[in-house]
Image (cartoon, rainbow, N blue to C red; front, side, top):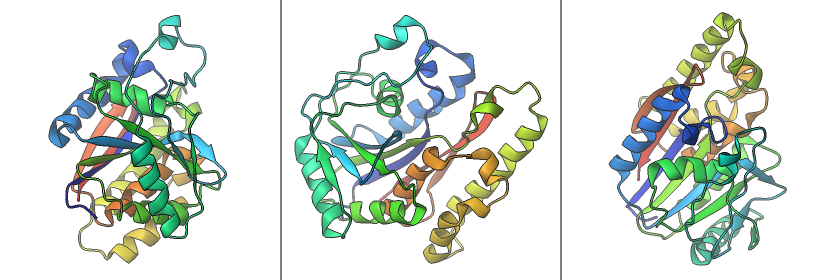
Length: 267
């Protein structure tokens, strides 16, 4: 594995709201800009988005992917957002090879575009859209151990100055975001977020211990309240598998009035 790689797990907010000047996304926007400044300009970006699931891991291989406006009920301007970055069939090919060499059944899709898990955060982080991007899907099983293995396979990807982004949300209970009685939800939100932060940051535990904790994530305090379905958490497992160490930095943001965490690694 190259010694020049950044890995980031982000909480990407609610649909296109971060791009519509929604005040409850101000923290998130500031943190994404800060992370981009810290990382610098990568040669290419690989995004594992919570918004794409396939039977087996699939990588986009189009040279000029279109955008997929995979959200509903937002203002018309939400469906006019542009992010004209190039794809990278070359990077897609190398990702596919890395997965298959590690015994992971995977494929590529030369027609699939980029969903908002990619273009919303990247429009904030790298607004010039001048960095080639590729997306890798989640496996429909959402099996935690499999996604750590997918990340581990990416360690052997020989691509200098690559930025790997797991684009999800460390809290993702849709009802709780908009509930009028939020006191109990806030307690559960903090309970799980504290566990997640401790798990990702603790440098005194073995990687085998950390890996097992992430595999058993649903046993954590309030885990299933915070993630009734885990597709927004699982990109973190890919990021961890690719880093195989404690996170180097944790960022905390208030998004949609809930606490969310983001983690970064330099490898």
